[in-house]
Amino acid sequence: MFYWLLKYVIVGPALRAIFRPWVVGLENVPKDTAVILASNHLSFIDSIFLPLVVTRPVSFLAKSDYFTGPGFSGWMTKTFMRATGQLPIDRGGGPASEASLNTGLTVLARGEILGIYPEGTRSPDGKLYRGRTGVARMILEGRVRVVPVVMVGTQQIMPIGSKLPRIRRVGVVFGDVLDFSRFEGLEGDRFILRSITDEIVYALHGLGGQEYEDVYASTVKARRASVAR
Image (tube, rainbow, N blue to C red; front, top):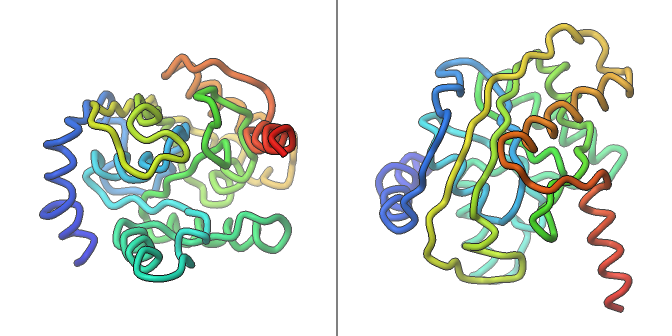
């Protein structure tokens, strides 16, 4: 109920009036079956505007830090994240990655929409980076199709490190549905997982025209952090 009030009565109308999002290809999102929306990731607000333009609820896997902040500000952030369908996950490897996979599969098993950022983290500079294969595992194990999505202009509205958004228009472009059912049963094959992930990222590149760099965004961030020290 809280989610519905935020999206359709309180926050949603206000955000639409202020940022006037434009949308292309929304008809590619299935109306009543489970699907993964695989999006590029330019800003924190991607997880706000993408669900805003989709008529069905969208659940995103969000880093657990957003749910554990101290004080009133932390409570507000946690409340907002939960109300807008964000699910806390630990981004560490090993058991944490497996738990994240199971969380996503639970959403898909309910016939719902799961939002995923294949790059694994926000782009540090607006480029498109190499995808993580977790998205491919979810596609095969969940036996669902995937719709590539490109967010346009969100990094200008709220760059990394900024606390308040600038008032500009937001764009959301949905690509054609990708079907990888031909690979069912091969979720344990790392070459298949890499092939699927690369095809998704290639589709994102074609939709948005971002410059692509074949390295993980997290690696770029780590390099920059080490130089800054």
